[in-house]
Length: 257
Image (tube, rainbow, N blue to C red; front, side, top):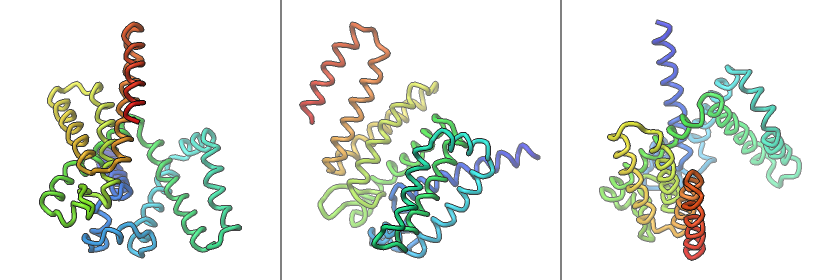
């Protein structure tokens, strides 16, 4: 009974983390709560009372989950002193802000977001966090072509680029490029050939969505991350192979830039 309860709570925590990341990614899930899918700017309004209530609940849950593991919290606070300094600076900026009421509210929002980040790193290891990001962004990758092709008034921006399941085409382009790299990082650790095929399909889909977004910034960022990924992989090769590859990659990167 205890084991089943523990597994159930573990799934609930995973769903909570998944939901928060999906909400924070700028997907259309925000507009579901606002009952307004057409107006994408409504979902971005942090001052909207519904979004404020949702984020307040998220912050309370995050703080509760972090305080439930006090030892891990102490370790993080001792190790990340600059993080405390940054959050403290945001809170202290209330005293010289032109809009102190808004400043203190958003500073406390930063505190809540920081607690969620602390929860992630104390609850999951780096591999689990990477998989959580992949699940979050892969849902968006699958839904983006459906939204763009099935509902062009929602999924295609006025400029003509795809924005799919996200609030803006630049956002979709950046996140899809990032997810393609995340999938490339996970592929070597996957033993199942079937899962590898799915991951490679995901890499191709995400890469295609970067191009369809027509976001120049996202495209440059994607190529830069791709070059860095293969440079990282080249460090594991033999010296006689790695050095020529490194030189060629730098030259190609310079030309693309």
